[in-house]
Image 1 (tube, rainbow, N blue to C red):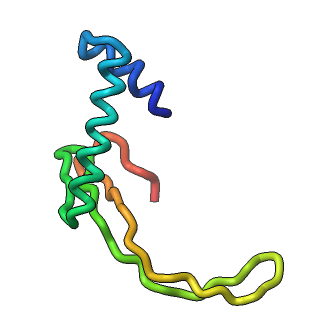
Image 2 (cartoon, rainbow, N blue to C red; image 1 turned 180 degrees about the horizontal axis):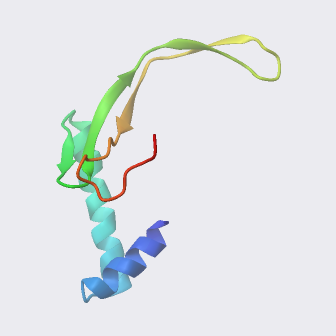
Length: 91
């Protein structure tokens, strides 16, 4: 599902225009980004918790040449799903 699909589903349910629903979605993503930028986690009950985790530095190989490449440590966003979410991935 893309942003336009999500906006199209939310707008009629909220009895608002697609433009207003799009702005609401933009504000939601901005708020999540701002929360994560401060190092806090953002929890949505029944959906999951956005959190910042650190990825350690490692070595990888270039598929074409087989040469080793160093990958720097970085911070990434994660969204582990909620245990009470209606749809869970297969294991």
